[in-house]
Image (cartoon, rainbow, N blue to C red; front, side):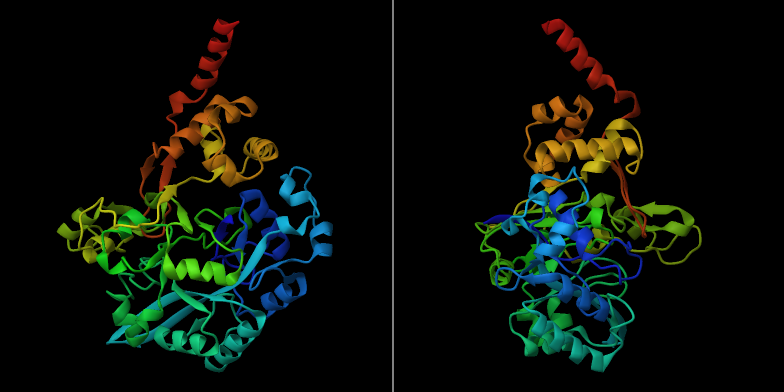
Amino acid sequence: MKFVADLHIHSKYSRATSRDMDIDHLNKWAKIKGIKVLGTGDFTHHLWLKELKEKLEPAEPGLFKLKKKIQITSKKDDWLPDNSNGDDQDQATRFLLSGEISCIYSKNNRVRKIHVIILAPSFKVVEKINTRLGWIGNIKSDGRPILGLDVKELLKIVLTISGDCLIIPAHIYTPWFSLFGANSGFDSIEECFEEYSNYIYAVETGISSDPLMNWRWSALDKITLISNSDSHSPWRIGREANIFDTDLSYQGIADVIKNSSPSKFLETIEFFPEEGRYYYDGHRKCGIVLTPSKSKKIKSICPKCKKPLTIGTLHRIDDLADRNEGYQPDQAIPFRRMIPLDEIIADAKGVGPSTKTVKREYKNLIQNFGTEFEILLNVNLEHIERVSSPEIAEGINRVRQSKVDIDPGYDGEYGQIKIFKDKERGSFSKQASLFRIYIF
C-alpha cells in the first residue's frame, strides 16, 4: 500500500507548540494534507499519553486510529475532503507511537546535546520506557524531556525493553541539538553510539538539509535518510514527509526504514533546505549571514561583535563530506522539494499566508482535489487553473520544477522564499483572458 508518513511531531505539551496540537486537530489536518500515518509525538508525557489512550483504538498491528464515536463527533468542517467525512474507518488516519528525547551529557571532554526520535510498537512498550526514563529524570515537565543521559545508554535502555523499537537521531545537523551539530555533536555515528552503532538504521535529515547534501558523505550510504515535519502546529504537519509502499503496520514501516529498499521507500518530501533556519552560517543579532567559504575565511568569527558565528548545515556538511556536490549513490531514495500550498497561494496572490483570501482559496482547492499532497504532487496544472487561477497553477508548476528564489536562513531565522516577482502577479490571468478572447 502506498501512503505518506510523518513520524516526528510534537503535542500541545511541548514548549512553543500550538494549543491545537491535540488528537482531534491532528486527525483533521492529516486528512487535509493526505498523511496516512502520523507519529503521535511526546509519548513520554503523562497527560498526552493519557489522551492517546482515551481517544485511540488499535488498527493494524502497531498502529492506532481515532475511536469511531470521536471521529464522528469531531467533524466540524464541511469543506474537508471526502476521506475526512465518511464513517469508513479504513480511511482513518493511523497513528504510530513516537516521542523525542533531548540527551544532554558530557563525553570526551565536551558537552553533548543530542535529540533522538523513538518509535514504539505498543502502549505496553511505551509504559515500560516511561517507567525506566522516569527513574533517570523528570519526564513530566515537557513533551520533549531533557535527560542527563548518554544517548548510547538511552539506546540500550529502549532496545532492552523492546527490540522492535527504533531510535532515530533527529534533525542531524542542527547546530545546538543534534548528532552532527557543530556546537554539541559528533563527527560520526560510531563516535556517538560506539558498539551500538549497528542499531542506528536511519537518521532524520532535518529542515535545513536534504538527501542531495547528505549523499556527499559516504559514511551515510548504509543509513536510511528519512524526513519529517517536527511540527509544532497542526497545519504544518507534512511539511517534510516520507512516501512508503509497504504493509500498513508498525513492522512494515520499521522494515522499510531498516532496509531502505527503493521499491518500498519511494521518496521523501523535502523543504528547500535554504529555507531552513540553519542553512548558512551567521549571527542573527548582528545581521550577519555568510556562505561557508566566506565564513571559513574569517575563521567563523562575527565581523561585528567578534563572537563565534552559528555554523549552519551547509558548512557542517562541507566539513564532513568526502564527495563532490551532486554525487548520487546507487539505490538512493529519490526526493522532491516542496512548499506548503498556503504559502504558494499567498505568493501568487501577494498576500500573507494567514489571510482570508488564502484560506478561501486553500479550501476551494481541497474541496476540488482532496488533499494537499495530491495537489502539490499530482494534479494536472490545467485542472488547477480551471478551478483556481493561472497564477496558482503557475506557482505550483514552478515549485515542482524548483524554479524559486531563496534568501537562505541562518542562526535561527527561516529563509525567505519567493516564487513570483512583484511585477508578474496578475499577468498570467491577463494572458489567460486574452487567450480566451482570441479563442472565441
